[in-house]
Image (cartoon, rainbow over all chains, first blue to last red; front, side, top):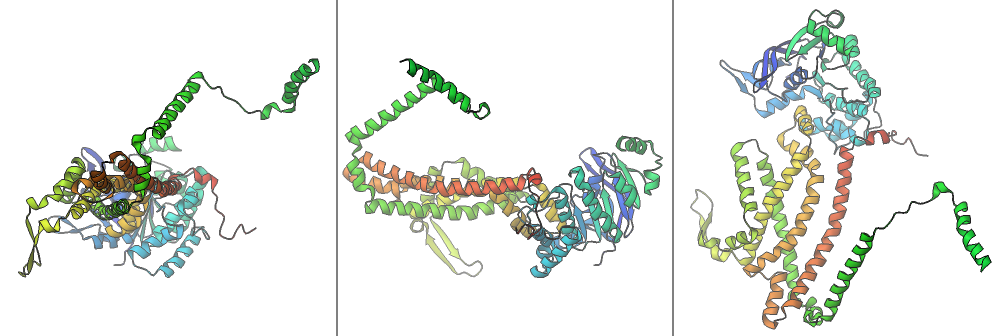
Length: 255
Length: 315
């Protein structure tokens, strides 16, 4: 049951009708590795993360998260869907942070962080509440537990969302453009929390437009365009000395 | 005269000097159309009041006489009970149908859609008469425990009294409308909320009760309040089945006394009073939930509210 914090993919393919959103993706993410996925909007980076979180289903290919086939079990001729409980179990071992935060507006910050442990894992409320408070303190929001999402700034909301994901003790954290919906002056506080998480050895996949963050924190940078991985490697190579013309063009536009 | 003129001439200019131009209110013109509209409305109002008072056929004394007659009050009570029961059963069934409608299982979804289409697509009055006469379709139903042989035949004619038919008819019809309202509430919940719940691994049940329903409430509750008010008036339809609710009670009296108009006025006044009485809590509910809604969705508030950590502003 213990996840090993890896993500492994071979020839992941997905299309909506005729439109191919994931061409043929291969991924090898080690435990504790920080992978930043960059690329123009519509390049498939969000879809890739959403597939890894099981929010969307891939059409074909191998997808293993924490060493297990995600959502399906391999048989001789097919992948058979797992039952809901198993899928839910797999999901508890990953954390997802959304661009639009998606905090539950009917719950306080503390209740948001408690929601996973209490409603999914059946944790005791008291213990979950004190755990939630310490997680909120970790993301720099001590004392904000009783605030509702509408009382928080975008950056604060996103940090609550990170605490909510961490409350499930995930082995892999997925960030889907976590700072894209924030005011520029709020971006730093969220990136700082993510940096802290990276230093503690969490496996992280981050779809982002923050090239500075990618350069500083990532072990591997993946450049995606048109649903395929165009180039990948250490940030110094992909960002500093890109070989592919498409990467060069993209970086010239954003930097 | 001269000093007077002088005073008259002086005072406005003095006043004007006394008042700072930056503080002067801005006055708007009233066009002739506005005066004409006033006059017309006053005329219509006065005419109505005049005929209400002078036309003796209204028989206001009879209205007063029967306004709190026991038969009328009993009818009013039954109307209230019918409204409550129809809303109660309608809400429960409406919830079930709304959940079925949102199901990913196609036949379940189709069954719910079919229900909604049928009950919204046919008149309530026809449905009520239909339920009253259901015995013609199913004269006997056997109530029993399957595979045991224990069963009891029930005569549907006896079972389906006018009041039962009224409650069933109104509830089933209301369920269809409420199902649509609840479905609209579900649809108003942001897709991201469901994804967030999914990504935490929440079960379908938890997702429904902890995430979707609480957030659908601001849409559903005010609309349901409106339905209650509508239902209160809709119950008058069951008078055709002979259920002695408010309207039927007045009909029973005027069938005997021929004082049709004053008794219909009695019924109207009671409907009006009850509707107004229900509108007040309804408006409070609407206000409360629209507040919640604007809080939930108002991202612009962010800039205004900068929460201070607890206990931070004791002084």
